[in-house]
Length: 135
Length: 128
Image (cartoon, rainbow over all chains, first blue to last red):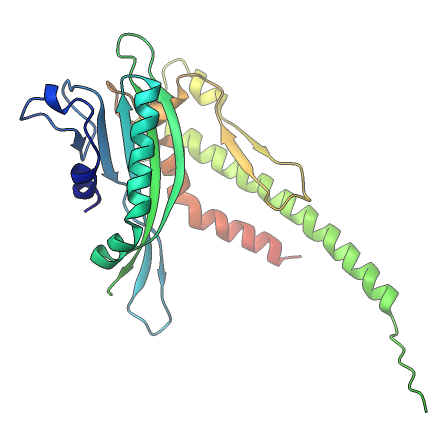
């Protein structure tokens, strides 16, 4: 759902140069050569489930999601990261209604700058949602 | 007509609370140090390949570089135990790059032990 929303709403800076079988937003780290910039959206699993009451069958789980912006330079990296966060922040309530994803937070944004020929600049953004299992 | 109210032992109560405060602070610092040592060990075990992640040991530099530090300002609203490495390639191993997969030694160690760390802290503070 998050990936689909980003595909529909984040502008690909090099859409004209990308082939039809190449993607801008992926769900796993690329295993073959890609054209940067790309964005990867990965579900990091669920953690710390809490029962919502002794006689309740509902569980509240934390769902961290890693969104990594891979770019050719720092400006592009920062712009794309800002676009992603602004988009997710602005659709927080509609994602809650559509997918029961609650309490959006940006947990961290870590820059990782590769050196050498690759020279890819990336931002590892970890966002969190809460989800009520059984609701 | 007048009513006189006396509170007996107020000064004793005040001194007791001051002492309890000091004991609580001391227990929290000790507890955070214990958690720091524990998590440092967990990250090292992960780097050594004894957990779910693949081993990241070659020369041993990364493994040896893992240290923990507890923030010393007991009066701040947050106390932190930081487990970190000062090796430059630590970030590439942790987060991966365009050519290597992430190893997530720190993040996975935290995720696996979050509940245990909370219990350790709660147990230590409850013994005061």
